[in-house]
Length: 100
Image 1: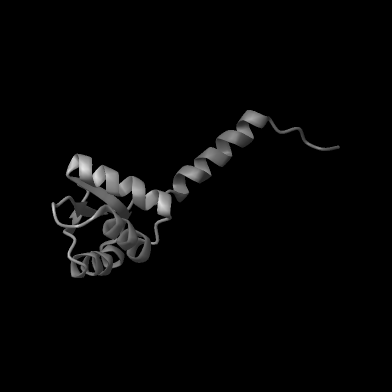
Image 2: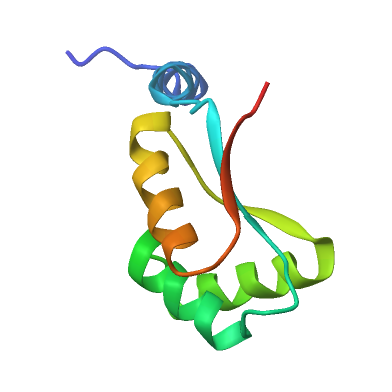
């Protein structure tokens, strides 16, 4: 005879496992607005450097423009720092900042 397992108990167990698997990365890659770079250049940079889709890159570019800065990527410092360097080498202001 099969043992009957409560569905809500299964869901709770799955939820507990999912919560344990979530990684919280301590750093953000921030891109800053300026009056020099075009939307197209920022979008192209985000696609090439951050592996954004075109839609993601466009949304980030608008947020950067209207908010003055935007966290375009979240991750470990050692992953974000080379991306930040690549972005600044293209003449776009970017920083890696601790979330805390």
